[in-house]
Length: 630
Image (cartoon, rainbow, N blue to C red; front, side):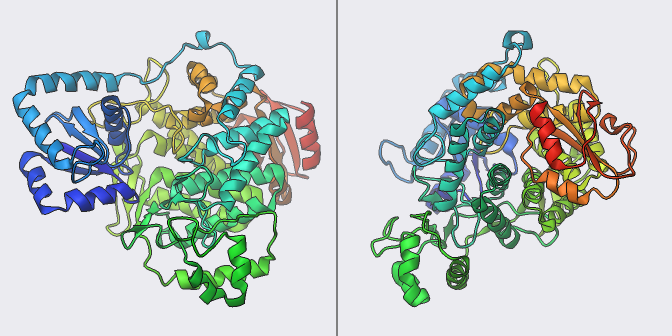
């Protein structure tokens, strides 16, 4: 079998498709020699995880398109990424690879099957080192300082971000730095987090006209993006920018959050209520064509204003990228009046909207939509716009109506509005992000029913995804039988690790419902990876923020009494990471933090620890003072 894995917004996937898969001569060879299977990695991330690890073991690297050759049992024995149509720069042509693999399979079948068995056993291994909690030891502030120091060793202190080109947003690392500053007041932590966000917002990775971020930058200065726009990237960046605004009050973040949410509303919203997955990088067969400009176009559109616009957005006759111009803010210190900027953008957007648009990937994914719900909740908390909270509520209702099933399909992973059909059983990260979204919805609405649903779903995950020996979670359901191995994913990559988010969920819910074994499991899972988190924090950013919650005091905060709306909003707007927060407007005996809290009378805050509360205070400022002195 030949399996090719890609995704709709993948530039090189489309290149290989045009060069090879659509070439009649190449297609004839493929159809004659192989059973050919095309897989969308976003619909089947479980298969992508398995075969990506195989190709990385074979070739030493991975990427997309991911082309892997399998035995009839689905076991991998050879693979690679992009193959050109002719021999090029020491890379064999696709046709020669096809012929060589076919001949080897016919002539050396036994050796190939042995190699496939060995590789499959390798893939089935844990893939990461797990220490026992006793070996890992307890968590101390010094551990978090070590994480910070190791993370800052990779920080680009001039252009922001971490490491060199290509540069990804790494929002988990930014969020850890924001929290580290909150706890330690180390100014360098805040400086690096702010620098990273500012450089991205000013850069070409950000769509200066239409809002929203591209997937990553191909250079170290955030100028030239890989132009595809993904829902999950934008959700994660909204979360990071919202938390940065809570901590700094910097208006740049409020503006970027609003523009990014507007982009998602206009470009990625389904009429049914969910969010689509992505926009392609290409249009008219050219990467970035929809977004780039020639100076004469801008001169024609803006007339006498063109000089000021071009100076601000680094537009020139020779261009700043392949003879054309990617808009980015060259001198952010030079403020442009808001009404002038709006007028510029309106005129250019009128022209851009007549261009041929990048293709839309209109599948709706459970996990990415759950991340978007969390993003809307975080934006509402930071900015106070009721539309964001309403959008989060509406999206959750859509997921529960269209993507809820039964049994193995307790929730579905993917939904296509065109056919009105949900498919594929949901994976660990789908459920982990969904539980997180329920928790965040409870915080911004005060509706305890969301928290109860989060607990019920967590019970279900524990029953069907747990690896009993380690306490971690498999990526797939125990009844799913179409994968050769069940994998455990712990690294925080482009999206958060399902295991990391589940550990955070269990800590929160274990506290909210007084379930000690859930809190112990969260701490045990973090302890098992402690050495890896300390040494490689860039690959364990969500785990690193979890260590903050375990190491420092996890606040239990209740707002109780009549008419808490204004105080609720004021509380949400403040930067208070790692807390369990609930409203007590009705009696909920199943929630121990709410026991014996008044549901009538003047609204007041209770600050608690292990369900023991200090004397209530009436104002947010008083609560903040209690937290600082606790």
